[in-house]
Length: 434
Image (cartoon, rainbow, N blue to C red; front, side):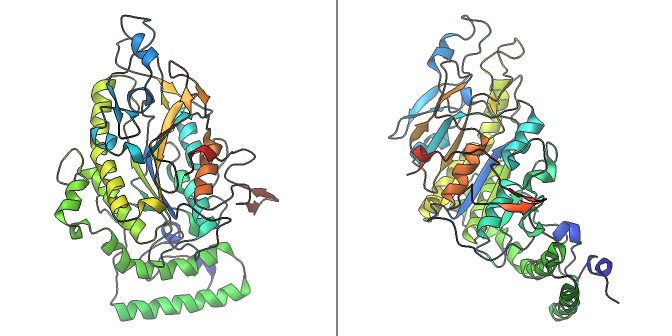
């Protein structure tokens, strides 16, 4: 007798149920309105990068650094007007400054908690108190996947703490919408290699699927079983599609150099960015890349300089590569951390900043947003967002809108009520849309 227990064990393609239930997203769905973007690449800077030393130039803060009002810390890097738009960008990002006219700086960001755990989970799921589906899961739930060979949502080297799998999970959404974890620099998915010859594997998989189909007749509409049936087929196809997608050696030398491959400082993040471009080309809907080490309470100048150097050329290369391939116009690139850094000298040594959640900066590029725009502002010392204020629900609503989804209509009924990513809040930032 075939039972659920026998079916939810390790199968022909080498994946257990828990490791593998998310690998198949539904077919492409119709958006609520005409989308500006088909896909998202989210560049997450874990730890909270300093907006005051990168993208939010504050002349008054510069006047009141060491030697002035001692409680304040002046910007530790010089800002230069960049591109035709003249966006002020710190010299810590010389390569990215050349892409200034593609960037839409969101200088009026804010979030409601200054703790890493709470702010990270809120940025990814919209809630710090409850387990909720992630932004990527909602995106794929709303639109499906363009690829039949790859999952709709991929996260590359996600953080292991501060929310962990919750940051790319599906919570109460069907399991097939959660993110699939890939290792960076071509690390791939563990346990994907075939264990049988192709003909034998196909025969075994067909047997398992026939058994699943019979069980499905006795338990129709069971979400775990529905996900399992799709998962096995997707994994079978991924055994050939994933190795091809993550094989960066196939890229020509000029492209690899564009992303900083071959340079120890930029090799790791550059590989992730190049992998993201390859996944975007192949129809993956939502791709997230994580960069760790942005929590700079001390040694700010050295540490921020090192972190920025590791991502500057790769991100600039990603934007340039997407544009030259005609992909930037419908790929929304989002950059930022869970919050920013304080205007105050955190440790009294003139070289560190604390957490700042009431005002900070993220940026977007491509995907229907205005390039060369500085939207919103913090006060003269960079402490509080005072103009063009966007909190996390506003950010989520705007991303979904650009994907063609109305955040108020994108709902899922669970436990007797309709849930949505933005809960009861969220306003689309119309001013940033081209």
